[in-house]
Image (cartoon, rainbow, N blue to C red; front, side, top):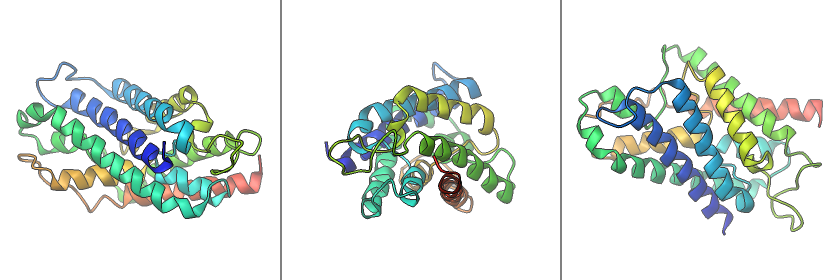
Length: 248
């Protein structure tokens, strides 16, 4: 499979299942209505597992521009491939969340709450404090990228394009360990902003929220959108810096 197609499909599956669980928990008249942080964090972790299983053997399963940036900064990924990876991730997220919306369309239509309709798309803060919201996304992504880097060093993998090895990304951890990593980040650090920790996961779905014909959807809150984009990128850069200073 082409590496860019693998990123698109893997990210699409991630967002189909991740957006799906939020819709299932929050929208009215679903079978799962009323669930909480444990269900949502667990499902997101398993959604990442699914994406990694599919994309890992082909692209390394970045599924996240922050992962691409972190690996690029540490020299474990070819920067020339980064634009294609990031575009594929954003498009995959848009497709996945679009399918999830269509899947739950009757339940979107049954709700008059614009906030509930927005929740399966972009993230939003529990308490709006943009500097601390930015810090939350930075710290969550820092943990994600640092763990990935320490499990995708030269002793565990090789650069994209090396014929002898496996592409580097979240798949370097293995699908089950990366699911546990996402799970604990969600449970431990997800209460403030909903832990986007992934610019594509937020930007693509937020864009879809703005263009889909969702009745009574309200604002897409573009004034907040920079937080789940820049926070993860800065967190990834800091994780890469610490990794390079501390060494493997």
